[in-house]
Image (tube, rainbow, N blue to C red; front, side, top):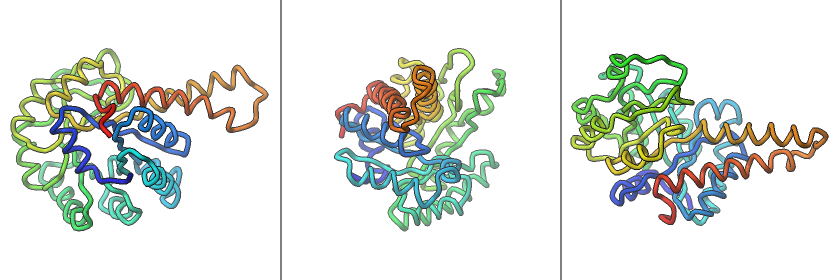
Length: 283
């Protein structure tokens, strides 16, 4: 069933688990996510980035995901991930997205507030909740020294001011997490997360969930993380299974036989994440 992220994340926030937010780029990834959600009886968010929209088309990928969500017997959200502009956010609202992220985190604080508030005003008028971001979440390729790492993190006092000023429904925070594969073992600043939690009364979001140890994930969920993004891990499962299939069956030309093992591999990843996040059986 198609729902908004507000009801899903508030339920998770109040009951001590996190909703998995999984990125899709095509039909096969979407199949895998929904099969996992149904198997685990879990609520799920399916994320589409601006890059995915450019690749698969605004007229096609959102329709694929929305149709899956409408037919599913578990709650599902169609979410814009890292919306780069007001214009893209509006396109997604018109396309029937049930959750919007506007990412103006690279801008100075006041400009981030203004850009976020602008999207919030329109989205809320349409009954759609908004996720925002405060603090900078780096990529795995970046070499971040300790002082820079601290500087990139979300400031708890700023977080409280930001939420009040923008009216956003959920907030992505930077607490030592990064996009892509991590170099070494990531270490979340759980004390900073606690400080943010003490000042902010809306669900918090953890980006860059791939590669974070399960024990740290569980501790973060206890401290108010209600949504966790997974993308890289799914892509890796897709491509690794595809390489193996083509190596084992070099003469196979049927796309169904080539891509079937990749769908199964991605489904296994999503099911595993759902278990760690504590959302299994919450649909």
